[in-house]
Image (tube, rainbow, N blue to C red; front, top):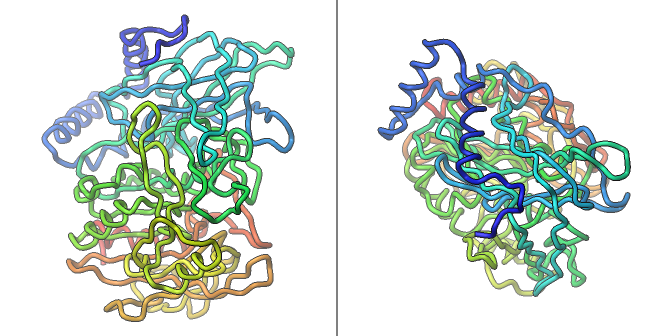
Length: 523
């Protein structure tokens, strides 16, 4: 392990600090304490803890967890080098350690506040601990390596051991300078990581962090889309060992600096699930290379913009379906590109990926991709036979989500009628062209999306039965979760002259219907 800088506390000090903050944030009620102890005992025995999320969200949220002062290096940059950082792992379990790497330019003092994102009475996050202050140092910008790889080898600022009482969730570390040589005060940025667990749960929510990294352009126009040979080939590698720059597509949201696409497209779902007390646990794309985690849950959710999957993820999720786990693709452009992982320069597994080739099998979409961009080293199966609907050409655009089967059980309680539209919910990418030979497949929504306001494409939302009373639902839009909630730190996106309108009671009711059927509480 790289030695921390001179002001970094040792591991014993970090654990003591984290434990103290966790104790301060605990509920005082002895009844709630007894419930937590019972839940912990249940987890240790491999049992579910269905009240865990309700208990966690009963704790006080933070009024101040968002980024307030951010500064990009230039108007055309995605980088905020005043302070920036990254984590040594995509996900970490309680009792395990994660390194947080930080650079400040110029060198200056800073602190790190760790927040868990959730509902928390509408505040959206809870402070878990505060670390520092630390003496910042300027860490080197890596040169472009083979396949334009940018891989940082920064010294860690701190090694954080995750306390046993930190629930699974998506965690943001807010980096804040305490001094600034320009005289303009402090600057901020995020780091992001997932805390996972291994307990049985009703819902496993997969974050789309492979896609966050594929689009990440840090430090200087460096992503899988920015190679001089073109933006769709297998030519560029990207590493998780680097900060997240500001999200570079469709809208400029300063809250995305350092946080990937979590606050863009995915947080509204987590916020809504936790608001309603659903028993949810979280994982990264890299946690789904085997089916083990998902087999302990009743439903698996693909969330937001879930484009890049290692082939092992695909086979894992097929096994979940075949074992009776319901699948919900509340996402768009999903399972689109085979993205093989490899280890980092430090030997850490699953830290580098690239666009290895299209999913699609012999489907015309995959063939078109290879005709346009040349041969790829990998080809994946036809994702339509997993999701019920495929990636199509063009895959991006905007439109309304239109009801095609109002008598279907997913619409119970919505009052929706044939051809009734939910404005702007299709975007910014979607699915279509469902396979015709999946037994029991039903089209529950369909309509037209327009690319750039002109090029039409048919999108299709589907559902089909699994082999054990389970089902596979495909919402066919990245923006489905925009119809569930609009939490703090989240901005409504827009693209292709179309935009979602925000929370909609019909989207909420459809999602309740799906989840209650999936976890055995309705239908």
